[in-house]
Structure formats: C-alpha cells, structure tokens
Amino acid sequence: MSTALAIDVTGLSKSFGGPPVVQDLSIQVPVGQICGFLGPNGSGKTTTIRMLCGLLTPDAGSGTCLGYDVRREAAAIKRQVGYMTQRFSFYEDLSIRENLDFVARMYGVPRRHEVVGATLERLGLTGRQRQLAGALSGGWKQRLALAACILHQPRLLLLDEPTAGVDPKARREFWEEIHHLAADGMTVLVSTHYMDEAERCHAIVYIAYGRVLARGTTESVIRESGLATRRATTPDPEALARALRDRPGVEMVVRFGNSLHVSGHDAAALDAAIAAVRADPATVWAADDPTLEDVFIALMGQTRDTLQ
Image (cartoon, rainbow, N blue to C red; front, side, top):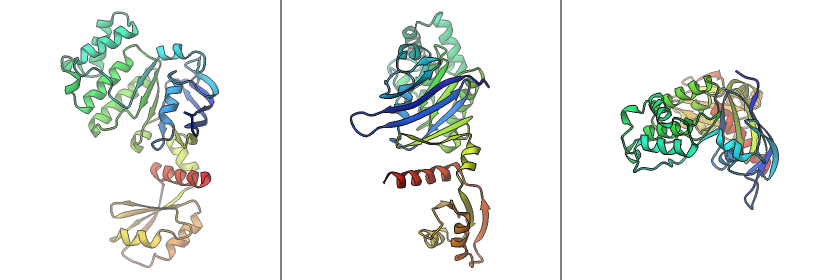
C-alpha cells in the first residue's frame, strides 16, 4: 500500500450559524486505503465528506485532497472524486444503462458506450441494463449508484452510509467490490454504522460532536481504549444486569443473548463489583476482549460527560 496521502487535512471546522458541526478535525488517508468513518447521527460525518469533495468550504482548517487544496481547488477535486450519497439520486424512469450513459455524458467520459458497457459488466448489471431504476431493489440500486460513481475512474471514492437498508448478501458483495477497487489503487472513505463493516476497513476514524475520538486499525483502537471486559453466561441475564448496573467500576452492561458483556476502564474496580454477584453457580464468568461496539459506546459516554 502506498505511503502517499490521498487525504491530508488538519483543523477542519464548519458551522451553519450555530454550534460547530465539525470542529478542529484532522484526517490522513493513504492512497489505496479503505478508511472507515464512524460516529453517531449528527456527528459531522456527512459535513466532513462534503468538505473533502469540494461541495462545502471549511470555515477553518487546511489541507489537501488528491493533492489539491480543499479551500482553493474544489473544482479540481470534484472531477476526481466519486461521491455516493445516502439517498438514491438517479432517474427512476430511465433504465440502468440510460442512467449510466447520462452520468458518462456529464463527466465527458471518452468512448462512453464502451466504458458504460465495461462498468455494467464489472458490477454484474449487464443482464439488468434495460430495467428501470425505479423498479430495482435496494441492493441493485446500490450497485447502480456505485457503478455511476466509478464510471469516470475517480482516484477517491467517498461513500456516505452506502449499505443502509440492503440485505446481508448485497452488503457482502458490495464490500468485495470495494476491496477490488482499493487493490487497484483507489482510495475509499466510507461512513457506516455497522461494526462488521468497520472491521473490513484498513483503518477507522471515529468522531462524535464534530471531533475525532479515536483512529487507527480496529485492533489498535480496541487495544488503546483501556477497556476491560468480562463475559457472564447466565440463565437470567436481565436479573444479573440489574444487579450490576450502577455499581462502582461498572460502566457498561450489554446483553448478547444469554450472555452479558460487563465493561469498565478500571479492571480492579470492575472485578470487585462482579465479586459481589459471583456466588450464583449457574453463572459462568470469563475474561473477554471488548468489541468495537463496546469501545465506541464507552467513548461516547466519556465525551458526553466531558461536554456537559
């Protein structure tokens, strides 16, 4: 993977007349890397993506996207970026091929008929190319949207929650194609709420309240969280959860079927809290690794406490 940076921005901030939506945000993404962009609704992910692709001008901050200045060279950035929005935005009364041909015309793609045909083939759309876009299921609409994003051979793909509302098989096929694109040298920044998708990325950036809370590989983010987790397998998880909540050292109690994930940053205090309820022989306790979801929930709680 290249060490050159496709995205290199520092101190980005943006507001819309109220509190900052994005505040002092810095992101570096190497060429050919898939970077997961995570955070709760309203955390500033979409605003950041729009600043990176030239649709919004930052109020503060500086840096480059694909080597172009994000403040002064937005037009040049737009020509080399594929941006897949949350909302399906193609003509529903046109066929798949007609939609792609229209997009190719807009970008001035040379030999557009040949390029459209190759893109249809790559995304498995050839057999459905005459089907109206409005009649497609969520998974096929997703494929059409991705096809439109890569027609002009962009160097950077920005995906804003691209798999929301599609079934697991379509999600898996979508991610296979994303990894193929990255292997060919395309850089991908993808926002998602799905933890399994985050784990498919080379690196992740987690933001909340417009600020970066964690960054790195999935493994490093979990390791550096400092979170200790214990798993309890019990016949009555609800009763055990009630007994553990609000005890000193217990920051989170999360249900997983008949098991509980009990977590906190002070391992000694966590074990002391658990000791008071360990007498039940029907409950089996074991040390466990925190999940990415555990880490992000803990980060959210810490940040909320800091801002209150």
